[in-house]
Amino acid sequence: MYAYIKGKLSQLFPTHVVVETNGVGYEIQTPNSYRFQQYYQQEVTIYTSLVVREDAQLLYGFMSEEEKGMFLSLNKVTGIGPKSALAILAASTPNEVKIGIENENETYLTKFPGIGKKTARQIILDLKGKVQITEENPETLLNFEGSESSQTSPILDEALLALEALGYSKRELNKVEKKLQAESYTSVDEAVKAGLKILVS
Image (tube, rainbow, N blue to C red; front, side):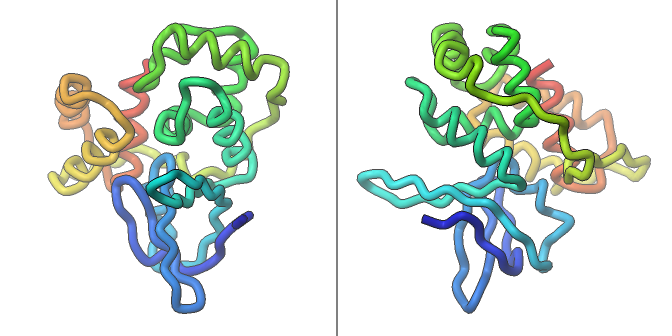
């Protein structure tokens, strides 16, 4: 119904962003909302997919059409819902997921929250040969470099909330928190990216 939404990025939350256009604020669920942090209060284009449930109509948004396409493919797999698809895309690029599928790498796929061996096998069965591996766009909001500035608690707190929203357990988050506290970050996105790298390694 909505191919994309273009407007001002007016709000950021751990699970979603709000894009305002023509006086209307659209609440959009995203894999990692803090990827958009550097565009806060600026105009953005978010590629969207509307998912209709019995109790809600939810907009899901992505940074590229490729990411949106990977979400739609994953969402068609038995045992995979929008939340699991978002968690996969939050921790990896579409191309990494495609390579994992084509290589039948169940170990890689089971590192994501809510994905067991049975579901990983189902992803491979359903999507192998149907996803095209492409060269990644080098211009991505995930290319933040580390900072030497001191760690601030609000950044870490927001990052942990974002990871929890993706489905990671308290035990996993406690493990990640200790490692994140040893480093310094200038943005929530940078901290979330570092946490996801630890969780899927």
